[in-house]
Length: 436
Ligand code: GDP
Ligand code: GDP
Image (cartoon, rainbow, N blue to C red; front, side, top):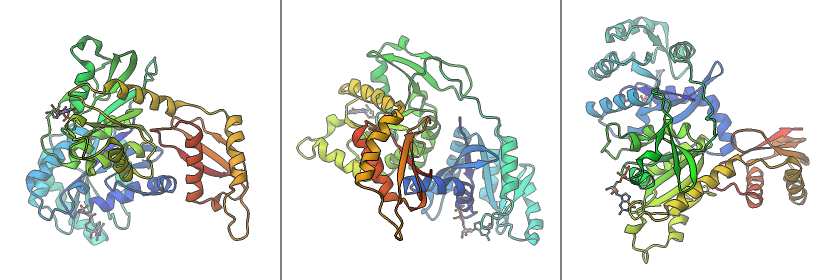
């Protein structure tokens, strides 16, 4: 399982500059496929063959001019809870500030790896100025210049050394789908889960282990078997009252990464908001199956808005990945909860289906022949062969003589044709064009 690295520190020290540098290379790859970058605060990074997730905690409170110490404190505490390692960024230009002291005092108590980064060390003069950061009592520090990138290699080497080896994912014998119930506070996640569990507590067995990474709970209900991936809603760690985007997103990261399917619960009375969107993107970016539950549907006046209109609005927000089931439920009245489970199971089947290569070629090559990629600079692109790759999430490769000439609109055309023919509802898919 991916490990999570959180970047913390007071505003303006260069957290987001460092974050962008860390995710750069991966992001470029993902973008060319998805076409858009959307979450500026969460991304994947890779160093020496190890992939990890990076969260810029500062990104979530950007824009507010004066940030209170209490705010930083909460952020750091959450990072401590949720991350496997923490990069604490400071600024050599400003030196140690009282807020840095506060952060350091929180981090000194932590059992997890903490790396102190002294940023804006753009020249060797500043290298000397950095010495004062020993006074934070966090031991060794790493000097870097996030704008130029110097020093980030050493920081990442140290990070890899400090991070515990990722736990090898032990395949559950039965290969049950893993569902994560996610959404912002008060959307109704716990109500949904409790309605499923009902009073039959005995049906819930912790597959357990006591390590923090085994967060699956075996579930059997209405004839469905699945593992429910723990979220804040289930464990009810410190229940977060604040409705800040940062909290629900950060608390969702691990559960989403660990799941096959994300059941995104939204509050019908509030509509599809920024936080819902961030969580949706988190799922999409990680190539998870998605089911959207519009909960508290019992509270919506049906003459003011039909479910069709409501769903259309959500699809506008989640475009271009709109082939997603949207269900209108009530956890309170136990309405359509069975349907919700059925749909999640169906999305799992969609996600794990394998299309035989011969069938795939038969269907797609005919379409491609009828609508070939547009010629570019007088050159014709020929696609002669295609197949689904044997990957955990659906990926399709098309072999062409001039792959670089096949642009995004044509890839979208291919994706749409695949979705028309085969059921990939709720499942992000990737299209690659390769040289034959
Ligand atoms: P954040 O608020 O901690 O996310 O900080 P930002 O990443 O937005 O950076 C704040 C300012 O510091 C921006 O103007 C950056 O260009 C600048 N900055 C970031 N890293 C460096 C660095 O390594 N050297 C210098 N000189 N400036 C930097
Ligand atoms: P969580 O923070 O996402 O786990 O949300 P909760 O399950 O704690 O629900 C938040 C509030 O919404 C509680 O007061 C619930 O009783 C209420 N609630 C949850 N689901 C529904 C629903 O379907 N209809 C109505 N009317 N209220 C609901």
